[in-house]
Image 1 (cartoon, rainbow, N blue to C red):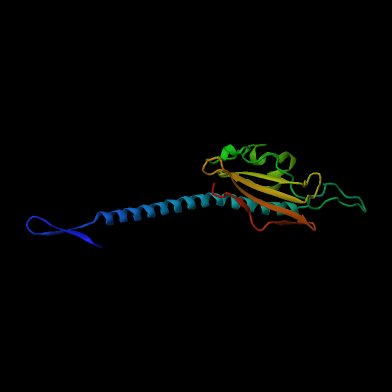
Image 2 (tube, rainbow, N blue to C red; image 1 turned 90 degrees about the horizontal axis):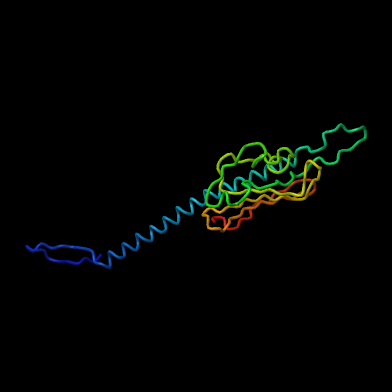
Length: 202
């Protein structure tokens, strides 16, 4: 680097950085600071979205497990009798958890484990998350919903289900959405290999 040279009283030389050199250093430090802040923000956002991805993955597994369970009516078949349905999708949840997106807008929500609340909302009718046997015990960043056209209690096999996680991590009103789809074909339930994601870091 070029240095400005001067002379102190007594003839002793001095060296120092020029203003241009100092400004270059300030700019470099500023850029590095911005990159570090962006990296940290992205890391934190990714760690939060992991919740939604893991939860929807578990819901998919639970939907398959529930579909494979015997769902015939609990009656003794007569000689030569037939059962109506051996497999069926869990029916839709009557409400998401939490019940409104406002509960997870820029904050976390702790679900209520009480009877008939949140994940236990449909226990009495064996529908939704109760049928799936899915719940989140820890505070959550996302609102979860589940819908299908099947019902093990009717029984109706159904053709498809959809599970969705909605969130607003930064509380700016723009939602992030994660979605997983499942479809019944040849009396088997198939789940999409990838999540459908929209604004994942919002």
